[in-house]
Length: 182
Image 1 (tube, rainbow, N blue to C red):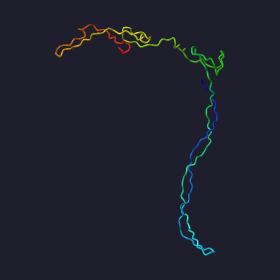
Image 2 (tube, helix red, strand yellow):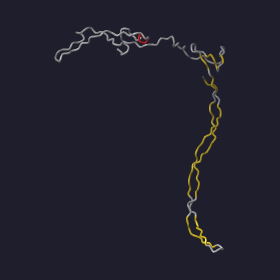
Image 3 (tube, rainbow, N blue to C red):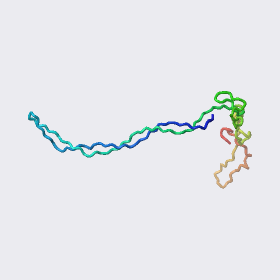
Image 4 (cartoon, rainbow, N blue to C red):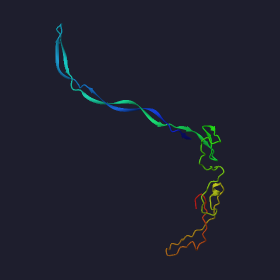
């Protein structure tokens, strides 16, 4: 798909922020005396007198809602389908494309290989066959003959050990060729 159009549109968004707000709370009252009153029945009533103290200033955060308008690019998305063999545009927005051009370019692509018919590339290996094709195709893998390796069994360190030149000529090791490596 690709985009067309280069216009701009205005988009309104709601943003929230916090602002600090100061407010006052009166301080605790202080007892400053007692007032005694006598009613008409001969009873004395005591009333406590309170005096206010200085107020304290506190700060709180207040949530503020703001409407912000921004200019953003305006895009129109067009869906195009391309042929996987020749790379030409076949459909635009689900409709068949005209052969007279229609204003759409040919895609700059190479034809894609067909995966079902292509054989996978296999790395070359050291060995009599030169590659692992038989292993990948599921053929049986031959197990080689036993190879006698020269070994010195003498306890005398001064005695020369036999060398591969004195023993049988070197043969390639073929134990589970392809499964265990070289």
